[in-house]
Image (cartoon, rainbow, N blue to C red; front, side):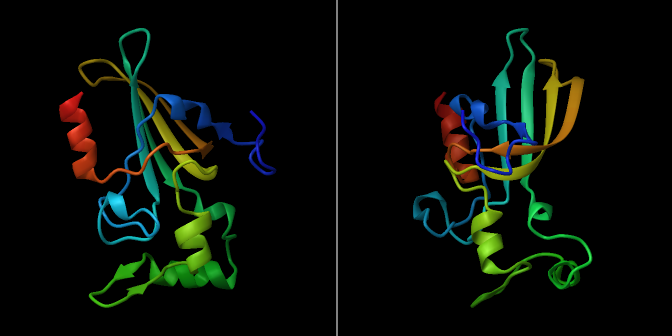
Length: 156
């Protein structure tokens, strides 16, 4: 698979999109009105699969803001002071500029994105066999609300 410039040095988790289910916050993501109500950014995702040895691989992926926001500059200082995006009844106060928060650092389905990932191998009784922390490049497959993911789990 050809990789966009800048993605070569990251652990490539995109191949997992053929068997991964990515779950996102259960809120409305602009441009994806069918997945819920409330947010405009998708900053986390997860996947799970059964391994050939009967164990499970479980991964949690968080958008890598540090790829775009370098330490000790005015944007980093402001984001540090804000700490998070704040959602009010009639508006939101973003931690990052909109281009970053709702686009470049958002794990939008079918788009290559930088992430920090932790991947566990677990036994069927949830004992940790192995854990790997890595910077990664992912391409999420779907954006589900928690309710939609539960329906998929229950439906099997």
